[in-house]
Length: 239
Image (cartoon, rainbow, N blue to C red; front, top):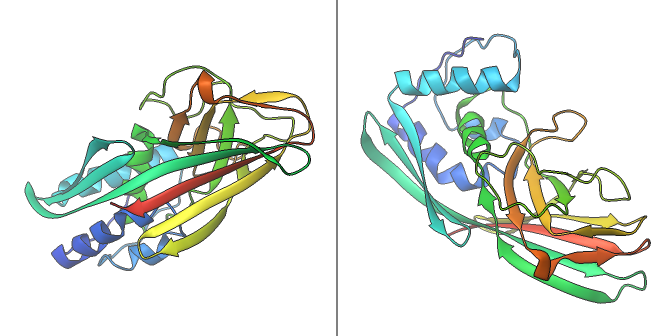
């Protein structure tokens, strides 16, 4: 697949301002903020698209640099021909709430999430690929004890049954530069969870589409019975 477009300095600045929001909405609108001339050939797969877009960005002298500031905070720098033209920052956290079958809150935990390498590449694609349409709204659970690795493309041992299968959450704006993605799982079997993730696609369409993950640990493990509910709220905000 060949992707051809031109990136103006003004367009890069607009894209950078929008960078922390691209996880939340349909991304065709953001593409309008960059001056593009194409055609774009038919898409042959997400992996090939990432390769092609990255190559074009390098040819145009545009580079996104990520800096992990800790506690769910990231700084994104936009460089053109090696010169910094803009930078912005955002935060991503996850609130997990366990309710029993009577609607009583059993426990809740709140921690920073980690954006994986694939998620960073995906942001680049959504900013600059005119055919990008995915939304970062799919939430998933696991009870695996592994520490989050930035090389992950999916949660290890992701749960796909018992009412805890990956599902599309609801996007809600919470102010300028801030939004939540929320989903409440209705548990239909005995289950435990402590590892969570947000994806850009459903399990059926692309199981390996992880953007960010969080390991809350055994101390915050949610042990549930049939009839309980598990509510996940991913919180994004400008830092």
